[in-house]
Length: 292
Ligand SMILES: [Zn+2]
Image (cartoon, rainbow, N blue to C red; front, side):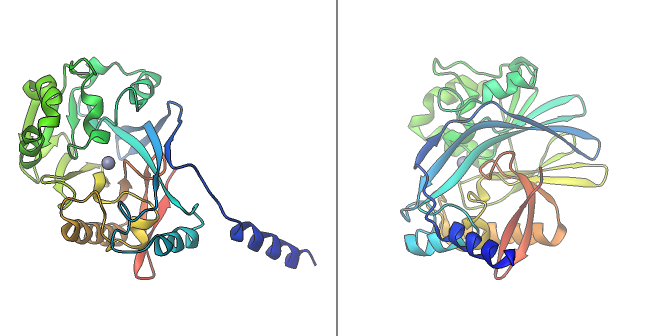
């Protein structure tokens, strides 16, 4: 006769309000090694934060109650949306490749995670940038305006690089890294076994990256999705950070549909660390299936 008690206890646990602080969340340096075909990869931790549920970022065309209902249905805390900041490192064909660089100091601890992995910044040969927002390019330069990865070629989609250069707020960053940037067109091979995949809508030249080895592949999705709950359950909902919200929603939905169909491994900079998993169809949306 234990079963009814267990059921009631679980029901009470899920009914109890789960609240969490909105804002930055302290994290420790973390390194997660994994294999993709014959390649060695590392997920690295930079930061974490809880975004407010105020319809300015998630579900901007919805109500906070509608967003909370989706969070609660997934068993996630309501009232805020958890976001991680993760970076990917790939060893391929003699190259040591980073995909994005997180916030960088002082907000992010990516440098400490890289040190924990035993990798010196000067050993990085290539950096693939998904887009020019601070939580992806912040780690490229120091507060004093020096390049943090002086030996690396920094690969950026041509349209994105033009947009980065056009923003006055990026002047210090552009001065620090400009000489290292190599702009590319969508679909380009940017490192051995790695191709750029345009996923439009978030920024002018937002790019994912597909890494392939020995019949396996991984798509680094950049900011085509942000919340492992909301972006998957409701991919068509407008996202406040998307420059073109309709295009961003269409790209997100198409990317997830392709990933659910192929079963391809995904890496997200903003899903729970280490950001690795697969998308599966659930109802009229998708669900995140993490891979540890
Ligand atoms: Zn981002």
